[in-house]
Image 1 (spheres, rainbow, N blue to C red):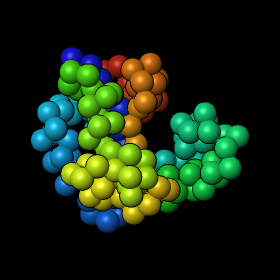
Image 2 (cartoon, one colour):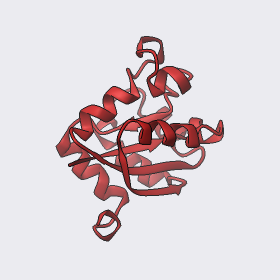
Image 3 (cartoon, one colour):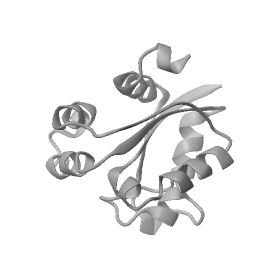
Image 4 (cartoon, helix red, strand yellow):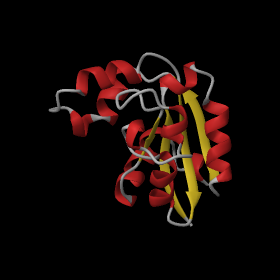
Length: 137
């Protein structure tokens, strides 16, 4: 079994879609190993998205991710990173496949309702950003 990291973003939480997204995650064969709702501080968001610091959208991304609560998740299943990215769908919901989370719930490329790790190495770092080792037993 592999693990990946996911976030249900503030737009989806505010729209009352977190439960439906969690249902899609479980229907997709994932086991939720850890879950927490929190409101990211500016420092947390800047640290988490630090790889994008030089990109023009960094400021708006940080503002978006701190505007309301998010749900952070540790997900487990075989080929977890790829399976989660497939279930999420393309970053731009207009390009996302039918039935994917972003096709169903995302408003735009900027407000795209969920985040997922892009590689197993990234997942390992992102999981420990929000969860302790004891959270992930």
